[in-house]
Image 1 (cartoon, rainbow, N blue to C red):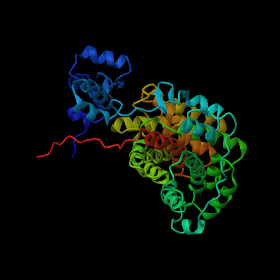
Image 2: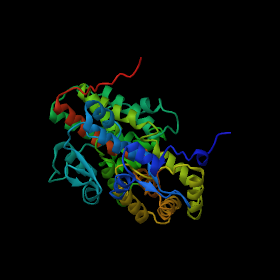
Image 3: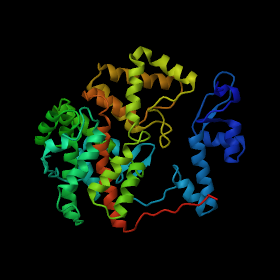
Image 4: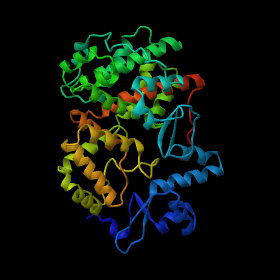
Length: 418
């Protein structure tokens, strides 16, 4: 029989105050100061027990401290939410959320179209007039593509097949001139939106080909209603998905771009990384949580039971937003406004409230996306399509910026073997 956490007071996620201070090599008073400044998250340890401290935050803080002692610790810590390793003019992150080219993403989502924000990320300026983007007509035969997908294939599978196919059909794919590349980037985004639902049913794809905007094409592709109000809501989600600095998929895209890969290959690198359960798979876990809770009135009991078993609640907490992810707050508000009676939206809002009342972590972006997907009537397991299509705008911006930097990304490993 495996011993529970109470047997040795061990927890893989949180440490006691004594353990946390020892890990950092500081006095308890210093640890408390770090926590009060928001550098280390903490939570109550239960009746009669002291507060516990986030191991992830502690290790990140230690990496920053170690970075002052030499190149090796800098490199080791930088790859684990540590010190910055690249210079970028695309996105900064602070307590208000991501800022695209200096503009708050939450504000852009309320005032600008996704296409305009993509142009901002690529060029550095919002277009004065609505940019001319192509309709998502495709230069390949759809039946030959959809025949390779099993019925019900999720969007990431469809896109992982579609993007290389689009590249193979583009005879000019290796032309790096800025003008053709921007045209290619615009076409790629609208075509990704049109093909995201290719595995759901062929008849969902064909109507999307006539849609003039990314939000409309994506809604129709996924088989959801695409009225003007729904498009505005989807547009907001795409904008908030567009970039988040140097996350795992963006870094993969930059590595590919630094090696001279074409835009289709760069986006494919991002999609491959997004397919991992620790990146794009979180939305599915949030959907499973909604199914587990079932009804809003069950949310508190499920949260309490998970806490009793020492289990995490997926979709809550983010190392960069200890006080809450502003993107999640914006999406939850949009979902509640668009479909206030939707059962899944109500259940998610109840889970968020139960977590808040228990003093637990606030919702992150995945919870907001799942709520918005439910409000828009998206089929199960398709919320990640919003993230993938929206984030592709940022991936393309990272590819352009890394190409302009002109060097190959080739970090070194510190050998620790025999």
